[in-house]
Length: 94
Image (cartoon, rainbow, N blue to C red; front, side, top):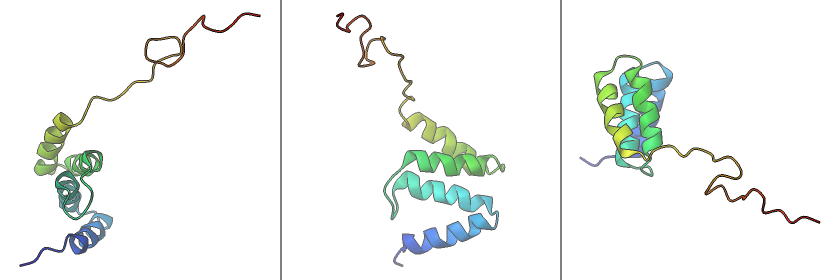
């Protein structure tokens, strides 16, 4: 049987709008695996987190799995810190 991921996305989104938590988890799986969409761990994590918040065990497991695959968050560096692109005291004095 051929798989139509665009059609699946349509129905999962409709189910999500109706409050069906397992559909949230399934959307997470679609994004995590790039099934018919560009693979996106951030979107997958969001949907898994929403499902987990409604006690969907697969959402909890998916969330835990996805957090290990994502890079650590980047923190902004204040001006003057190494790597910030700005150096204190480098301004020319007149």
